[in-house]
Image (tube, rainbow, N blue to C red):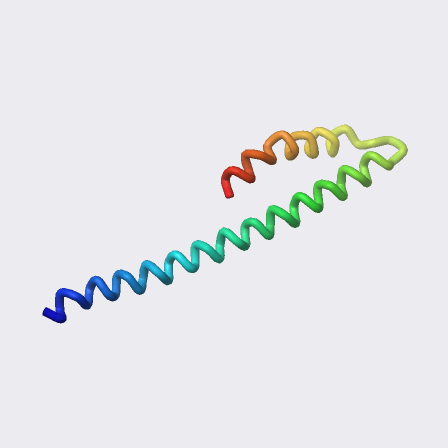
Length: 75
């Protein structure tokens, strides 16, 4: 009788461990995304204040802004 419950108990414990690791990974991804958004804002600000803004940087920043919602939905 106890032998039928041990696999369920082990499975439940492993499931809890896996879900906590997944949660931690999601939090880490959100932190990275926040850091990247701040970096893009700084790059845009610096590029816009320059006497001759770099068109490649402007295109990259625009592309990131365009896909920002997709990144948020992914998380």
